[in-house]
Length: 201
Image (cartoon, rainbow, N blue to C red; front, side, top):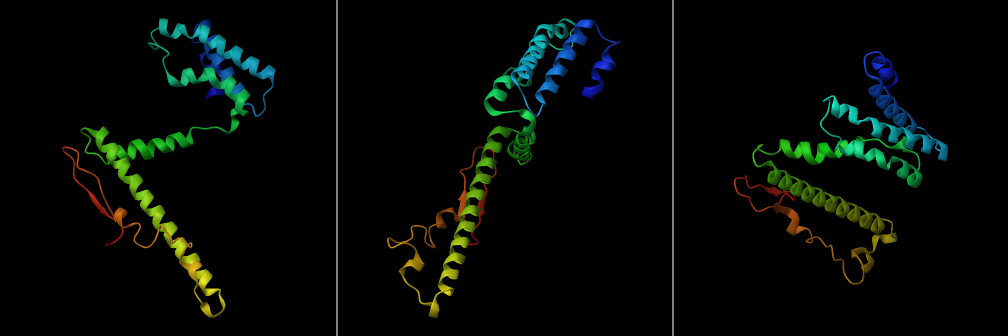
């Protein structure tokens, strides 16, 4: 779309709009460069400055009310970010969009759609607790299998004190996770109380 956009509006729009669109597209193309020099960064900044001087025509024509938009504001930081971190060719929005699905959309779907902010926060808190419990069990299982392997490798299968943990005792013994086996969160008003029994006890 970017390749044909200026050609599409060239005969249908005023010169000010054409210059504004052209400068923004130039900026977008400069950002996509795989290598930058001081000259390309200066050209990029010049394109952005030209866009900002001409963008008010859209407000005058009633196309938009303002330019208080985070994505428009973020353009100001591109040149300094490229100077500090390198070219922007390897960046995309897939990770933040994926997090938006995990932390906003799924949480909202789990709510009853009324007073959803509290329900979303509670749902996320519970998901985090489940994640920590699962990570603990995976770590404990890995530790058990490593201990078993080290015992099996000994001639005669003798067991010494090092098999059971450090000399001071293993702080994460078999009963260490019992507290987390039943995760329950106090019930906020108007919400269903859930109790997770993750350990099968």
